[in-house]
Figure 1: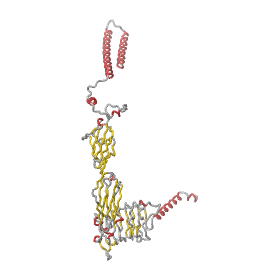
Figure 2: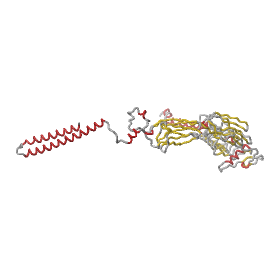
Figure 3: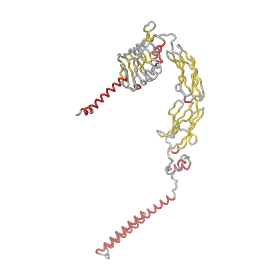
Length: 492
């Protein structure tokens, strides 16, 4: 085999595959920071030498940072700061662990885009202070901070409050350094003029009519002086607020019915924690029938509807323009209630063609009313050929309860057949009688002929020798002719 074929055959393919594999590992190592290891979902930096001096970041066009769910950093004495943009690319991050390292400072907005974070462990670092603002938007299951040299100040009083309000018995042994540089249990920390704030709304109950405007007032207090802000959630109505130190106001204009039931909160926040006072917005408005559809069949027939209104509207059904008196067989059922929205149906048990017609729903409260109509067809009218009667829809919903119709459907004994039907019946009866009479006559003739033949054979005047076959042949011919005649009559 020539050297060219040797290097361009299977051996060459294996060599190229090995090169690509090495290149892949090389690129991955370039994408991952020094002293770290990276996979598609995890980054861990545990090698103390040479170590890292900044929070690990992946190179562009490498592993997608959004898929990283866990970052572990340990024994990194030169890592001191987490900046605002260091962690923002790891939006899927759930577990962050930095232990036995030199972490001293965490920016306020460092975890602003990491809403999936559930576990944070900053054990045995160099943190002297940590604000609650870092974590207030997170739904954390664990925040472990033991082994940090916190300074006894108002800045960490929120940790004491957090420990006191935590329902789990697994509390941490947290300490802080007092003015004498001695460790003091955080549970014993007492700081003058350092307490939780308070917030009070002027309108504890808020009920307003749709389209109107309203103004809410709030006052806050506390030391340190708290910051006041409004939490309006996803309020649809136009709103604006004004705040000045310990007072604030919120004005809502042209209030929408979509905002009924929503919560509005006045929040006071300082270093130690926050307090809020909330009110539920109640909007009164006229009913609206947002959904009404033709009947569907399940366990029962149901005409489904959705009605909005506050206060709860009264519902009234009409059938072909007249008030529908409900009973246990036809009644309104409300299945789901969502504050000001009601989902239900007009339930009908075993409806017939007598229930076909126009159904109108009217919803009414003190602010107005609304109504909608649908046409319902449950069953065809007995005796109507729907395929050959193109005018059926015009008479589909006519009143079926007239005396004539009731007589037709309940009593058939007085029905008079038509002339064509009577004539046909008479002809059939005459044909049967004629067949019976002819058959009787033919049978009688055959019997007479049989007797005559027998007498002729035994008479002395009868023919002798081969003349007897003439009578037999004549007899057979007569019998066959009779049969043909009977069949012909029956056919006609």
